[in-house]
Length: 397
Image 1 (cartoon, rainbow, N blue to C red):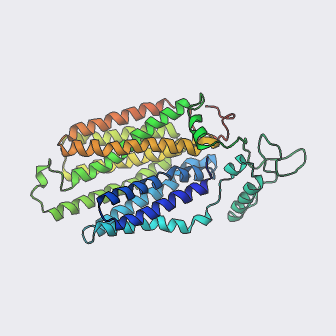
Image 2: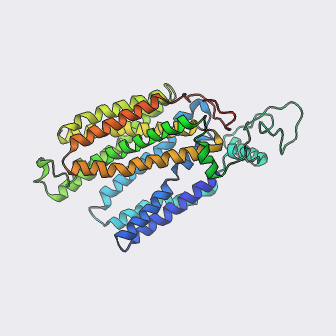
Image 3: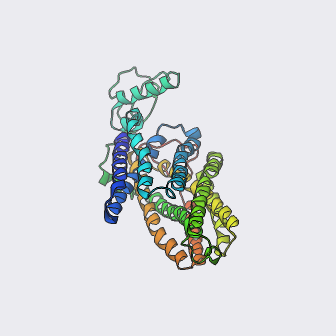
């Protein structure tokens, strides 16, 4: 696993530079290339969540990870609001320019992000880990418990103490593997089932989440030629309806996050995922048939509310299922597989809906959600209240 801070810096630099440069794209080809680079930078998202996860105590880890995820939702609401304001009055270049500002601002806060003490312990840098814990204690106006910070397998390493000691943070030190060896570790006997099930879950989640987002624009926009009831409307009114529906359904993510925050540490990750996936399928089902605009928006609101909830809980559950030595690699690869679902979804959703095959599109989403539910039920263990594991050797499914 690479250091969390390095991953944060690399993904942020790529996202901010490519995002700003795409504003000045001279043609469509350059725009596609630069947005592709933005996507690569955004794929560093699992680094953020895995890094943050290692600072949170297990007792309320789920709730704080949901709080962490709310900033994704604030970003989607910000972008929907921005599009609603900018696009009718200015060009797409201005929208991309404004959209790149948050990632540029993130670079200014990079120096405030400490390295993960767990990662430092794995590297044998006990003194550095101890200094970070002291800073954390100082910010929280408290003191560290008495004792020494040691590694389980290396004794006192950099520190000296008496025969009896009380470890502040215990970490089974393993040789930090290269990215290649970390990837193949995901297919070891202990991790194979978890890895494959996570891939299915992430692919299904991404397909469903982005499918709901696309359905909102496809069923609301002027390109929705299958809905004869809006053909007589002026284009400007159709676009206004599109931006309004996108904004309203983006707001659905807030109650979705609140709901997941309430239940994730109470009922556990597996039951939370199952419940919200089932609810998402229930909200989508009536869309097989044409619905009035208000009811359609309500159903899409509910479906997106549940979809972001499953996405959020999955992003909590995934890093918890892996030991520290391969946590970021495992979460990153699972997220990459999920992106495949996100890439396939526009082709399927947009193609079917534009071809007036809305019923078939919704049925496909229902099947994907059902497969995701099955994968959740097959996960080998629940992580609610469970301490994070640091090493493969100490990992017990």
